[in-house]
Length: 305
Ligand code: NCD
Image 1 (tube, rainbow, N blue to C red):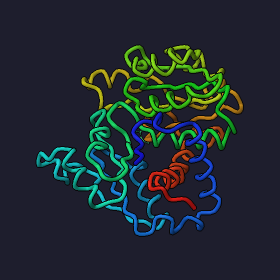
Image 2 (cartoon, rainbow, N blue to C red):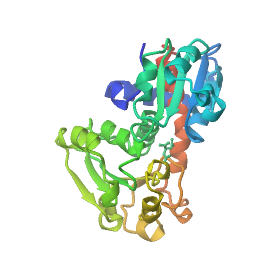
Image 3 (spheres, rainbow, N blue to C red):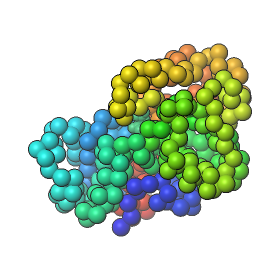
Image 4 (cartoon, rainbow, N blue to C red):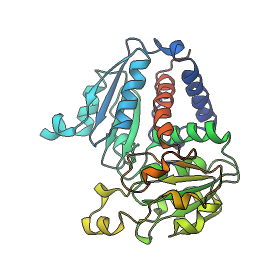
């Protein structure tokens, strides 16, 4: 049984295949409408979500399957003190596949030890978010056609941003990728990502506190929200929250074919004036999320069309 806990659980060949299936679903959705008939997806969200949970549910419904779950841990038995292990043991008897989000790093690994069905990590604390990365990769492949040789700028909260951690690890496996890490000193990329996926992989990177200084070098600008809920001290969040705001003025210094991605939700870090720029792809990226999740659900359930 295969789970998806870390994006590195998938080979690059498996990722390519998921992207191809997602593109086929986008082009021919009716071909897949009964692919998961009588299958049940459980979405267990112990942390807030809009896109990730709804795109998982929409994905399963569009495959002809059913969904159950909760979107608020206060309405589940964890509020009564039930352990994650017990919740998973029970839910895996009610469903064929589980997508879970949890504030605690590593909790999907615990879940994978107590389940009879595949587990998908839909975000574990400040750690990883592999299905967002699949969404990002589908968008990059569709828009730019390749992963090799790209200069990838990641801007904002590189410390707590789990989407950043997963995207860097995935991109580190392609040829001649360069990273530009843009963050305040306090929110630099943690060493569990930097050491393993950039330094040990021998990839070139630069760190900058200024977006203006480096925007002109980038093929991809991945903007992120400052992760308020992970700050031990609210004062620090308030001081750092508006460090980077991408606006129309800054976009003038970017390459004409640079793409702007953002996992969403956005707070202030991209001004709405940028939304109409053809390089702003974050809403398309969110749209893509449903289709790559359809491909992933089918893969983990062993269903081929
Ligand atoms: C991200 C997350 O949950 O990590 N959201 C998402 O799933 N699209 C990014 C964020 O919350 O900032």
